[in-house]
Image 1: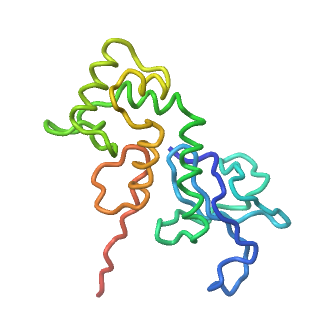
Image 2: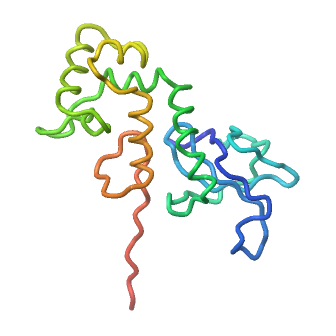
Length: 189
């Protein structure tokens, strides 16, 4: 699944300080798979923080081209600061999609359920979620919080998981983001 929209996390009108070209660049996060991207705006276009831009295959008004995927470690400090809030806004704006996850998530292995991969969700919360969704599917984050005893804010739980996946430290399973591209080992002749 390719990203069609992205939200700007940081805009560097003169490019990176280490760049000799001085080409403007934006760091952004995709709205469907939370892909971290480096975007080059069209000439004369100034991008604002948290501005949503179209990056799909059709004609793009603000973006000239997508330079590529970004690793979390390459984000600027400003982008890292904006990322948690932007991720939460994306989750809350597309609540139905994430409620669907709570309604349909299944086991990953014999011993592990995908709901248990969410921060602050252990076996008891997982069992409560599964029992409640069997009675009737959830219809909102508030519904989950009301029906599952002591459940932390579901949107925040998903946000924390997305941020963990983007940082990629020891992550084995990716629920909401695309796994990082694995670099091929260099072969010397």
